[in-house]
Amino acid sequence: MKETNREERLDFIENKLHQCESDLQRLEQMNSDLTNIINNPKELSEYYAKEYMDDYVNSEKFKKHYDALNQDSIWNVLSEQHAEKIRLIKTIINSIEV
Image 1: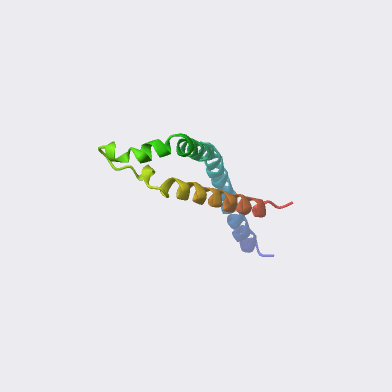
Image 2: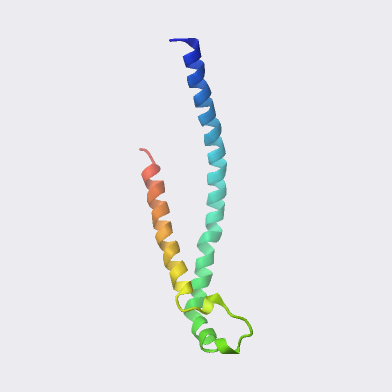
């Protein structure tokens, strides 16, 4: 085998190693970000279950328009996040090699 082919292969692999190191840092950040992503809908769902109807009924008293009082906005975002989490889990599971 020619030395240049080996060096080209090693250059390619070296780049992949550095990319994987960078990807690891991104994965660590994503894992940290997931904590917020998981907590935000919990708070929104709690509001929707406990206080939404009272605010909705009294919405004409507010000086400002709130998207959160749109009947479908909270439900839609919570449903879409749920579906996206399932897609994310499937992607991660399918990427794990045994």
